[in-house]
Amino acid sequence: MPLLVSPFALLALLALARWLAPLPEPTRPTAWSRLDIGLAIGVGALYAGGSVLWLSTFYLKGELLASDFSQYCDSVGAVQLGEYSGGSGQRSFFAALLPGVLARAYGIMGGLQITALGSTAAIAAGLYVWARALAGREAGVAAVGLACAMAPLVLLSRTVTFYPEATAAMLLVSAGAALALTERSLGALWICSTSAGIALLMDPRGLYWAAAALLAGAMVVFLRPGSPSRWWRAAGIAALLLPIVLSWEIASAFTPPLAAGLTRQTAAMVSAVTGQSIAVAGNEDFIWGRTFILNVPRQVVKLASLNAALRDALPRSPEHDWVIPWFGPFLACGLAASIGRDRWALAALWIPALPSIAALATAERAFGYIRYVGTGFPVIAVVLAVGARACVTRTGGRVPVALRAPLLGLTLLALITGLLPSWLSPRAPWRAAPISDEYPAALLATPPRAGPSDRQCVVRLQADREGSRTY
Image (cartoon, rainbow, N blue to C red):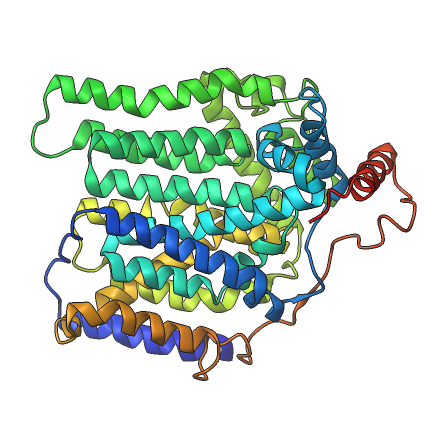
């Protein structure tokens, strides 16, 4: 409880002050321009470099993070050798394409590391776009700054699995949905739907983010104010559905023939924990590109029941302390950001956030490894930034526009690096102990004790080393 009191009390008072002295309806962010493209690229590069070189060292003992490494090694190695029908049946082959191509020059480890770095930059750019769509450029910069203080996001820069790619893809879906609800244009709808299609190819859990994106897009198409013409609605439906249909059509090319669907994988986890056999009918297993589309609602219901059973069967995860301290500030800033907004602004704030909130609720309780927690953590950075932006709207006009971004950036830098002692400091007392290096550092020196997948991974890594394909 002491961990929650200090930040929660402060932010609750800010929210209460805003309620007692209501602010006018938040002004619409300024029009998008090339400056936003430059800022998104700039904060992405700075965040990725800062995370991998410095910020991650506060939270990690060792060099890299990995889990089930041989499965990722198999998939990346298959692309490296041009064996596009190979790889692990447990991992998305689409996610293996980029690291696999890079592995031809830099080796499997190099391909995964470079992809993690690029994905971390995409995460920061997505955070900027998401928060900027809701509350302007200052909120976008603040969201990236706050993410620097969030260990689950920072550590993705040193994670040699497909989780950095998956997190980036799902975050970009949320950013696209927020953009669609705020801009309500055909271009924004296309971005929203395209990002959802990519997330579905990247990871089966992209289903939840795609559902939120389709809900946001449907609101824009059918409820857009101003009585749009039939032609506009027809174009909007096409922009919303065509990328999803294309993703569906090509998905089978990236799915191994014997791949287990998301429902079966979740049922296997429940069975392993409870000792009870869980039956999954063929029409209840979700595999993107193979599932009959009308069965998806039934599969979502089945997945929800399995996730509930998993949460009930497990104690709190080891990552409990990574997540819980942020809930108080999240709720307070969510309240501050919600007051005074119209229905479209509220929809833009919360509909894209729903999948991430659900992911956090599950990861905090069940199998909450740091890689799972990171998938939902971006929503905390965005809501904190938007809520803080709403609270300072009244005083923002007293600071010249040209000085706002530099002052905000310098202040956040001082807080997240610990130059100014604060709750955001990497050395703050509430922080959990650094996690241990999960990467099998002795993999090349010690023959693995597991099955043929591990042995094949060793062969491939040794071939990389002998061929000087190391990074």
